[in-house]
Structure formats: C-alpha cells, structure tokens
Length: 191
Image (cartoon, rainbow, N blue to C red):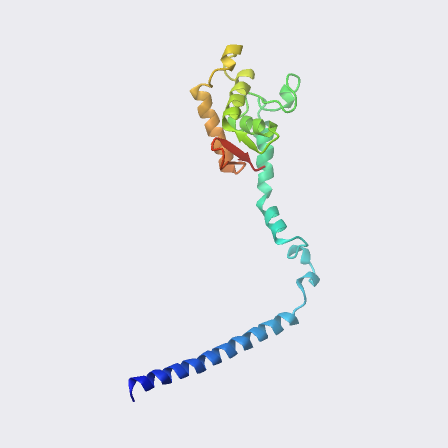
C-alpha cells in the first residue's frame, strides 16, 4: 500500500472512533441524568438543615467568612480586661473616671488602636489622624508623660510611632483592617 492510502485509512478509522466516542459520551450522560432523577431532592431528606440551606451561595459564603473565633477576638479587643483578668484593664475599675467607650492607657496597644478605630464612623481611616489620636490617648491616659497644649501639636515620639505601627500591623494580620488602594496612607476597616 502506498502512504496516501494508509493516511486515508487512518483518517476513516479516526472518524469512526469519534462517532463511537460521542455515542458513548451521550449514553453515559443520559445514564447519569436518569440516576440523578431517581434520587429524591435533598430538601426532602431528614436532617436536611445540616446539608441544605435556603440561602443563596453568596449568602452562605459570606456567613462562612465570619468565623466563630472572630467574635471572640473582637470582644477581647474591645474589653481586654475580661480576657486578661487584670484589674488595670477592666472597665469597671475605671468606670467612675471614664465613660464606657473611653480608652484606658494600661490596655495593650492593639486594643487602644482598635477602640480608636471603632470610634470612626467611616470605613476608611487616615493613618496620620489615627496616629495622632493614638498619641493623644496615650498622653491623656497617663501612659506617657503629661502633655501641654504645645506638645499636643508636635509629632508623636518615635516610641509611640513604633507602638502604633505594631498595633496596626497586628490588626491587619487579624484581618480587621486592610490597606486602602487609594489614597495609600489610609486603611479600610472590615469589621
């Protein structure tokens, strides 16, 4: 046989095989559809609430994104005295001198930064404004030296800036804030 005849024979066999493959695919697909139709709908199963919800996929995914542990973290950041079991951070010990939402200087820096973040009504916060509030909270609470009016306008010390940067990095690591795309010196609050 010549090469041309062999090529034609291989092409004809390939066409025949493609027809067989398509037919086999259709048979498998119809068998799967019939098998699935034989089963009852999952909403009729007992204990279906464990497997099937009435929510859309996006609602389920959104609910799954907020994990159970997140509420404990938020609670601990909001009231560290209840978690740390220390008297210096508990709000009840300072209730007479400060209101419920006030920052206590003996709290961990991440808690101070989180509580200042919660005071903002917007989701995007300027790092500069937040830093000045953090410095003011530390100065007014007595955690650092008492400030006069002229010191309030000064740049925060390098130590305060480092403490603030660490607190912001920890909040970002916990997923409470993320850097904003624009402007670059802003953070966006997730919770």
